[in-house]
Image (cartoon, rainbow, N blue to C red; front, side, top):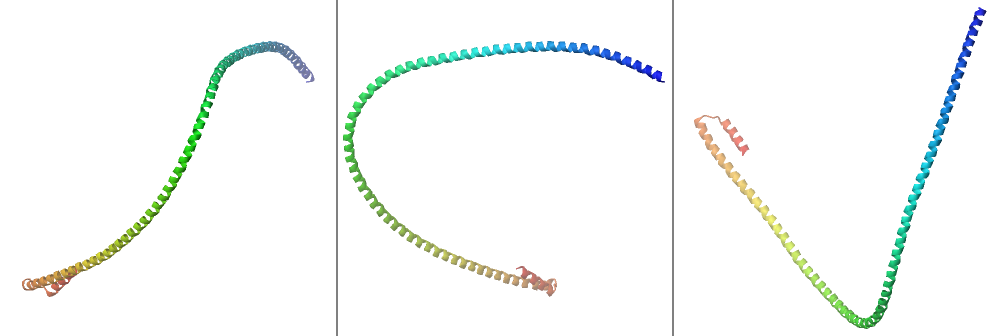
Length: 237
């Protein structure tokens, strides 16, 4: 038994060594291949970064050139505007000179106008005083007229109120008379109706008594039946 175990152990150890050797050789070749690939990728990445950087620099240069062009155009426009403003200022200066001459002439005219206005102001002041006096007189007259009209209106309103009160009293008396007449008329109509009903009742009773006499002779109807019939007829009426 111990010999067999030793042989087995030797076989296993030899197998393990061979497998380790193979693994070491595979790992070395794989690492070498991976490292070479890593270097290639690193170089590609550097090249790509360099290209991108150059492209960015180129774009930046183009952008700066474009901005410079825009700036030049703006400067040119500003220069054009300034030149235009210079021309406008010159025109305005000429206009101002003409305007100054016109204003001097206008001042002279205004001085004369001012003198004329003072004279007219004095005349207007006199007229205004006269007008104020007239307006004051007119206001006094208007006030007197208003007071007069107010008195007349109050007098008229009082007169109209008295007439209205009289008419209201008259209407009230007429309404009372009308109600009394209506009541009297209703009572008369009721009396007439009652008299008419009494006459009809008497006529019916007379007619019924006559009929009862005939019925006793011809058909021999009993007296109690006739009396019941008379009572029913009376209750209906």
